[in-house]
Structures are given as structure tokens and as C-alpha cells.
Image: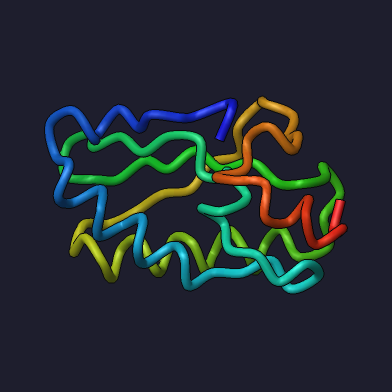
Amino acid sequence: MKNKVEWTAEKENPELCGKIRDSLRGVKDPEIGIDLIQLGLIRNVEIEKDKLKIEMILTTPYCPYAPMLMESARKKAEEASGIPSEIFYGKEVWDQTMMEDDTALNWGLF
């Protein structure tokens, strides 16, 4: 990932963030079949007053699957952490440099 993201919560809770990351790998974009972590769509995770705040972006601003993807991510993060979770839409515009690796590029998906 060239545009690597470091979650705020990783500094204090690396083990918890690992569980969340693993869980979010189970949420795949239905159009391209790649998970949220691989795509680099989860831009930040913070823990504030016993709540997870998760910043997420989408591959396109008008993604028809946005509500489903964001709710699936919220549920997975909450299940993995045991902490009430909130997803909010980030301001960054997604590009391929945010991907975990270039596998999808090699498959010709982008």
C-alpha cells in the first residue's frame, strides 16, 4: 500500500485493531469482490468514550452499495470488538494507491 493508513486506535490497542481488521476482511465490495481492507476503504478507527468511530470511504462517491457496505462494516467491527460502533463517511477520494497491494491491478480490475 503506497498510501498506507495508520488507525489512531492502533497506538493504544493494536490487538483490538487486528481483530477489527480481520473481521472487516469479511466485507467485500459486491461489484469487484475485494474486501474493505484490501481496497483501503477503512481510513481510520478511533476509540472515544467506549465507542468505535470508523472513518470509511468508497471507491466511488455514488456507490449504490454504500449503505449496505457501511452497515456491514459497522456490524463486523462491533462484533469483533464488543464495542458500539459508528461509521462515518470520510472526505478522501479513493484511488488505487490506497490498496493494500496491487493484486487487483494485476487482475485487471481497475
